[in-house]
Image (cartoon, rainbow, N blue to C red; front, side, top):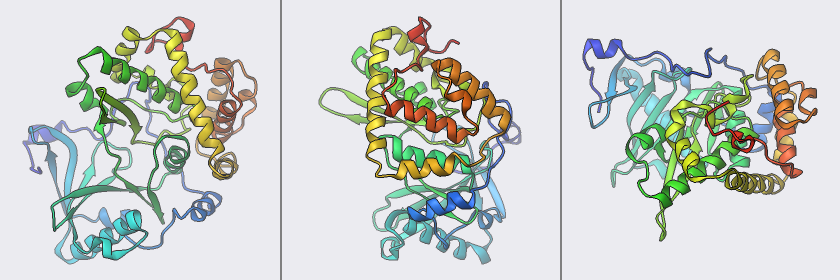
Length: 375
């Protein structure tokens, strides 16, 4: 629900997220012409629909609270009467492009129920709630600034992970589908498993998630930036962790940023791994995940190779970050190939080639006799 809240409560709302591993706001990098050609070849680019610039013209905003009265740190925005109809129609078209290749018959009974703006994100993204008037079913999608790191992150997630991602580029606007799952910070507060069987399964998934993030250099995966998708089966629960924030894809110069095990916000899940797992089981799950990633890379039908051609030429971080991370990865893997990398794309490519060539995993500090969460 949306309401204004007290003046004191509004004053406490943060303008940006404060993280213990990332002290500076990340700059936005444009999508290069070369990258745009790649995206066009895979139908990721559209020339119509909603754009970010239109949404920032809202006339008013009120704080959005959840059903328990807690501030969500989102604000619901309102548009002027002369612009609302046009903006809502553009957003309906965007949803049709995202979900049904532009077939407008699929959105005939849909209407825009609410548009929210995130106050703690670096780029102030918008979340659109769209509702089916016939059955009141609803969905979300997101409208954001284009940022090359984020788009590379989405594309790598589509190729490398167990999941598929729908997103579109419209000029300087990025449109993303909603990723279903319980936010991990909420899950840790309210839904942690209470029996050993499910605790082991959750810990296992975290090891795999940790490995997926590290080999493709996706950073900033503290509990506020990924969700947990829960699937009941005949033997308790299955868990899958999915990133929802890709801004720190291959940008930061510190190795620990790419390992979710080093974020204190994830400690309750890490503690389960320390309780239930041995270095041998961690090694097993790492090897399983690396084998799955290798299989997806080989089955990408050339898409991975084309993406790497673009990414290895692109500038998506400072040279100081590249040098720092290359030195750390070279030491971590005891592999001089990382020290010879000149771009973040080179580092991602070198890391993934290690996976394809079945090199030994080396991303869990548990293997050196140190538990998760400690350097």
